[in-house]
Image 1: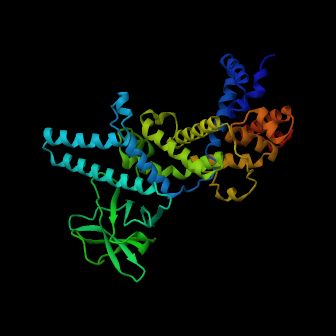
Image 2: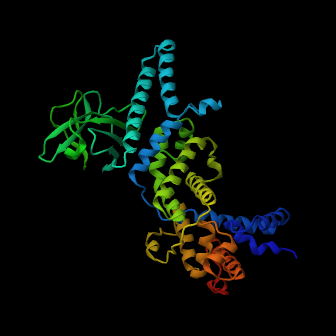
Amino acid sequence: MPHAAEALLGAHALGALTPAEALQVEAHLAACEQCAARAAEFQQIAGGLLHLAPEVKPPADLRVRLIAALDGSAQPARRSNRAGRRLGWAGGLAAVALLALNLAQWVRNASLQTQVESLASQQRASQTAQALRSYPSSRVVELEAEGIRGTLVYDPGFPLAVLYIWGLEDPGPQQAYQAWLISADGTRTSGGLLELPEEQDFAWLVVRAPQPLQDYSGFGLTLEPADGSQLPTGPRILGGDL
Amino acid sequence: MLPDSELARRVAARDRAAFLALYDRYAGRVYGLCLRMLQEPGAAEEVSQETFLKLWARAGQFDPGRGALVSWLLTIARRTALDRFRREARRPRLQLDDSEESLSRIPDPSSESEEARWGSLRLALQELPVEQRSAIELAYYQAMSHREIAEFLNIPLGTVKTRIRLGMQRLRRLWLQPELPRSVSGKMDV
């Protein structure tokens, strides 16, 4: 019965056939150009169905968890030994430390040294975010302003938080971005100055506060002189409620 | 704005900023598909995360000559979700999308953008009888076989086969051969 498999081509493209039926169809396609062309059209439709699900904004902490997961897997691309793949997070830190040692010994290059320090700082921020996320009461605040997005991870009972921000412009050597924690009475307390590493589109900061975060009602970021300010003096870049 | 192919090339060279740029660009598409398939936010988040970690690990395998990065990424997401179905031997209940709300988002079909193509496919799918559409959606998004769909909908196996066959043929006519008269494609609804 020629082209008996033709009736199954649509189901084949959708993945609705049993393995035996799929084999039967594939054997026919190998021998029948006409049906192979038709099957390609059905595959095109199936590929198109991928794009029909409505776009849904994922929760903000998915991004934070992804960054933390990257830190666990962001090994050098060429490394291939199996023991190396099992190193995990602790191994990642050790690898960074070793890398720093080797670079200090072998390369007197200030730029590279800066990159290593920046990486270690980034690792610390990610490790802190990961630790905070392990508490069931942890929260993630999504921050958004024109062209700028960020997330603040914190636990209300702890005096620290981790801030990640994307889309900030380089403030230049004379200025820096400063984080602020806002009390219910309006008092602003500095949360530290943001690192803005070269060749990275995002910045991070482990925010250290004198009180647990539950004692604050808001968070803000302003542009200040390079050494920071006692109180906010520059333009507000973004902010959010805690 | 850097094109996807350049960002993918940078991700392959372990550029985290490029990776996060792609995440920002496509997280909503990936999460939306995962949610459509798994219908459970927690599971959709996990599969989305797994998908992007696969992008991080396999970006070097992406070939721009074979298609758009978003299609490659969504294919990874679907396969990852299907693996999860198989691993857990479970399927979520289907919620049929009978709303017309999505139609308002369809871009101008006269443009030749990818989005316009998917918009016209969405329209074509909406034109199918709901019985054919739901059978196709169960097969594709929930990876159900003919027999599983028959059991799920409590209808004869032959009816499921006919619905999928006619529905796919009709989609082909509506989407890939839109110049054919509608009366031809409108026959034999089941």
